[in-house]
Amino acid sequence: MSLRQKLRDFFNRREAAITGGGLKAIEKQVALGKLPARERIKFLLDPDTFHEYDLFVEHRCHDFGMDNKQLAADGVVTGTGKISGHPVCIFAQDFTVAGGSLGLMHARKITKIMDHAMKLGIPLIGINDSGGARIQEGVNSLAGYGEIFFRNTLASGVIPQISVILGPCAGGAVYSPALTDFVFVVDKISKMFITGPEVIKTVLGEEISMEELGGARVQTEISGNAHFYAESEQECFEQIKKLVTFIPWNNRKKADPFQARKPKPGLDIEGIIPPEPMKPYDVRNIIRAVCDDSDFFEVQKYWAANIVIGFARLAGETVGIIANQPLVLAGVLDVDSSDKAARFIRFCDAFNIPLVTFVDLPGYLPGVDQEHAGVIRHGAKVLYAYSEATVPKITVILRKAYGGGYIAMCSRHLGADFVFAWPTAEIAVMGPEGAANIIFKAEIASSPNPDAMRRAKVEEYTEKFANPYIAAANGHIDAVITPRETRGCLIHAIEISAEKHESRPTKKHGIPPF
Ligand code: HXC
Image 1 (spheres, rainbow, N blue to C red):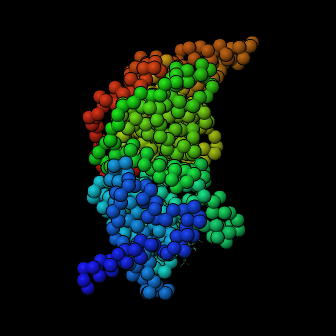
Image 2: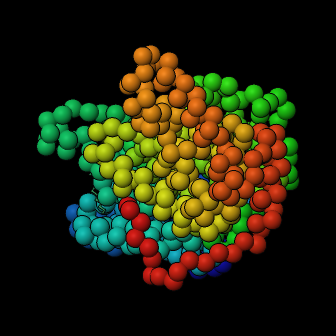
């Protein structure tokens, strides 16, 4: 063959592989509001940065009529590229090729790009759109999943791992995203579940649609399996691009610093907390009032909303924010909010992102449901995650910090480097109402006017204990600061903690209360 012929042959082969499952299958994909795999990569990555590998990989299955079946690129596109200038490894399952099903070679392509990401120390992004284990390949498909899960686990805490669910992700396949750091879903497109509607109907006799079972809303609002929800694939890609700017390439680096920017004018930080202690407010306004450009990138916004987590910048440096949300359940810690906070704290700690905690909570949520759901075990995760974390830890007590909640929310006792309290802080074993009812029980009962006596005792208790000064007198907090001084104190604390080094006892690994 002449060079010209060889080139023509190559172009033909490449064209055939890139066309995926053919025009008809692509039309079906597009009709469902879904982009083809390579289009997704194109829109997500910086222009002209994608380099594809293993385009000519072929399956090795000879059963069930697979002998002569060509599956373009074996149903998954893999390669490297850049997002906002940051290098990434990426794979995207191609549903137009055998439903994006995962066979032996498909899995090998994924594990190869995962190994690359680990060696190169750069984030891994996986776009999932698949009918699951390729049925014709039997146990080899299952082996493939196992190899992926193993690598997800090894990569955990070494490189950031991002999963994007843009189609079905069913059966055991969901466990790869579940092992990764952030899961993105899109309305009407993402479907995640262990057992599908058919199985549920057969086993339990219950009818449920895929959407109701494991659609994007379910996974972001009810189960908490997904971290980011978007209305469209394009919106989802914009969210991923933004996330990548907040996190480092790997656990040896820090996130890239940005130009420092003042918070947007108009948010008066002093006017956010209402004077009445029982009145709620949106803690996100406090976060916006202190962070650069008032830009708070919230994670798991729609699940366990009694705690708020997310990324922001202070004088250009990425920080991870954890804040009780008085708007929802008075900001209590419960089973779900503990899980949400603990996992985020561990992500930030693994990737050198300082933690800033805003505290305003009455404690852990009381109730039989919570006790039976294991609030002891789940709540302990917060204590574990904060105690284990060695990144700079800065805490601001805004208002209530009662009982276990005070300790759990990154108190000095769990290793906070700097603890600030506003003059509105109330740091005590429990709220004044409960405390007065217990310690002045006899006086209240024997009083001719128990209600007036109770009010007087609540006031006495509030006056004496519900303030930051006893904690300050004991050195449990470092400074009482005004709301307006908060940003400056946080920035200073982050700046002087730049070289913070703290070690923990040598061990194989701890045993967190999973
Ligand atoms: C082989 C598959 C496949 C699979 C889909 N296809 N899933 N081929 N193995 N798992 C093929 C179809 O045969 C079809 O091929 C093409 O992909 C498109 O599929 P459709 O069914 O036409 O698409 P749609 O109507 O959109 O339905 C999508 C679907 C459905 C809901 C995902 O295909 C489906 O239910 N698939 C099976 C899901 C499943 O049970 N997977 C195994 C799970 S067990 P043609 O040639 O007709 O275009 C599992 C274990 C993992 O994953 C364990 C890990 C620990």
